[in-house]
Image (cartoon, rainbow, N blue to C red; front, side, top):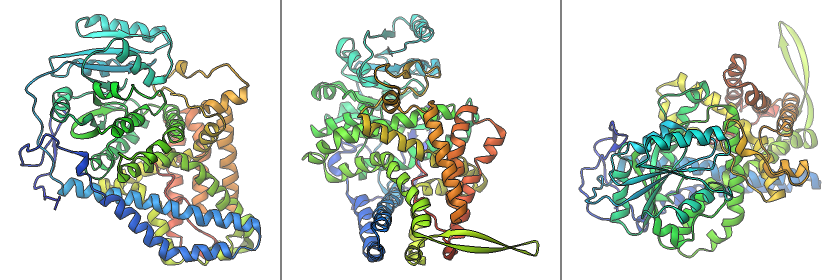
Length: 606
């Protein structure tokens, strides 16, 4: 049996490490061998999903057969098709929470590894108009004697170039600046250029511009690569910086901490350990063997797959904790989301078939790659679902009925559009329970983590809903833009001047916009406002408070982007969407009035 009870919880020391709770000594060089990874997580997910399909599938099929027109068949068919997909993702999040708990409480953790030698290491600090002195300084303060810090400066702003040069001049023995004439290939191109022409060390670390390393970063990670020749990289853990500079960072810092704690460590035992692009130590030999990083936006995941295909694997070092910052502004947050969404589309477009055809990567690892990566592009289809559920069902298939309200002793008849009776009939208590589970599954880890602080939890979930649930129109634009152009750009989150994010001047204005779908664009703002207004009107007419809350979040996004998170009135309004969604769940028994929750959890993405 692979489970062993751990008596002591993990504790974090002053150097940024989590002290191992296991009392067992180090008994094997391969502390987290990929051969030992178990399929139980995905057996649980697909077993539960298969049971849900057997239970609810006949009802969904009967719903489609009840349609009398081709329009009705399309609308109801899309509902019947998309709903099980939403359930699958809900069960995926439930499975992660269950097996993360098993991993944390029952799986024996290896003792910290020790090294008897200190091979040379290259610290590759990547920056593009976003240099952070504290981050670069943390690289110099690691307690490891044999390293060189390379500042891979792709900055186009002379001000940032001067700051980088000044920092390097302060530490000439340890710091080297590397620049290139052609800034092609995004971050991957920057890394490839340095490793090809300047860096020769057998191990190299990749460090983001805003990342703070613990002092023992190299001392604790190097032994993993030394002791296991099949380990291609070691990914360090992360937490949010304690000191925040903006209100947005303070409000959202919980999201970083909880995500890293629940969604990453269990992959050592139940999935595929991903290289997450920063805070990791890599083996140069693997980089050479695969021919460098694939020069796409999601170069980190592509690299992890490339070396896995050749028999290497990654390890997640839960005990080595770096810190990172949440984006300072809503604009930066949205810029990052566009980069992630289009980059994920590019990755899936170029890597899905090679991944599925691979004979060396086990099925459970393939699933663990595809589940989280497909989530972002799926928001486009969720947006289509919202259009059909919010507009098509009540206005094309529904019926009009007056609801009578008694206000101050006077009756007020309000006409509403009800959902079609074929749909309301399937919303039995079990179906409703499955819907609620799917809705709240992505935030279950946050609830479990902070249920003892209900007010803090409520504020976080409310404000995160205003940010994340409202990204659907932006995500839809990004996916459509990539589908039409096949282009993804590495937008620099910390580039506040936008100098690194200027689109090419080639082609028409429409083509330039679709090639980037930058959230600064008035076209993006207009689409979000139109979508919000349309959904808000439809929500009132069809009496669906959940849609009304979501529509308000859509409408707020452009204003939060332009005016900022610190606007008092806007911050108060950010509490409304989540309250309306939760309220609609509690009123879900009123299905006779067409009141149904329809988010299925896709609004809560962290």
